[in-house]
Length: 449
Image (cartoon, rainbow, N blue to C red):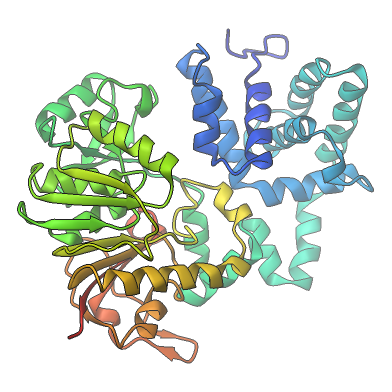
């Protein structure tokens, strides 16, 4: 396959991306999982894969804005009544016009060529809609919305659903910076010290044209730039893993000793588990629990590849699992509202209506943690107050919140509406717009006698 150089030389990058987007929308797969499965048995140049990856993620990041333009271009037609592949081909065309600086005639021509493979009628339809999209006066339309609803305007401007904007407004005065920072992704790698040293792993990555920058954690590096995707490099998921700095800080918060027995109560896919194993130098014992047999099986394969030998994996309900341990790590199932920069489809799938069920699950898992060990590290990749500080307030009769000192982060939220969390200085929060990481909450709890 060759890359596009002009209007007559077109590779099917947009076609592949439209197919992946259709899979994401019709299934529960994340964009990363859909891309991985799509390319699993296909021999395609890494540059094409990278281009497809970029299209998928950039379109998903801006889904509401692109849909807004598309609905204007479609007129009376219903988005859901149109072939999913064609809809996503149209979204890619709009993305090219408005965000990729592709001249509208070229973006339209590319989409029409691909649509012809479906049918002449499909090609004619795509041509008409993209010509309409080109003529949408976006500034005028946004100004109309701004007069009616500032929140809806902000949601479109920064490509987030309105419910997310509402949450962001409540947790930080810099909410627009938070929303903006969710649009950029920062990659971090953690050296797997069970199989490599920091020096050797860094040298190997540098030979593969990866530029790294140190972080406060000696085994964790920020990826400044790379040529080939990290996931196809020599050493991936062996000498190094891709893991956000905030996620790595959770294992540091556990402060595991080599002789400890630790229960990781929601362990899959195993990044934090393998980090704990490395910090423990493969000594002691980690009991990795997850309710999904499929996720546990994948995790076993991954841990073996990473040289982990002190982990016992078990399929069990985290609200009922029993064991005697020194510590529990509960990185709880959550809304993932802190992870939208790396998983943009979360923005469009999650609904605040699901929050009550999540809160019930988190609190039940926390209550069960108190029966397993006297010390619990509780974390989420969520920015909400309810899943974090308020959960600790609700369980004040069970847990004492201990002071947590980490090299990165800031105190929790003290006041949220009329609710006051008077131990905010003892917990740690990380924000994308402040710390250049995923949004995370980390706390250290001790069980009251």
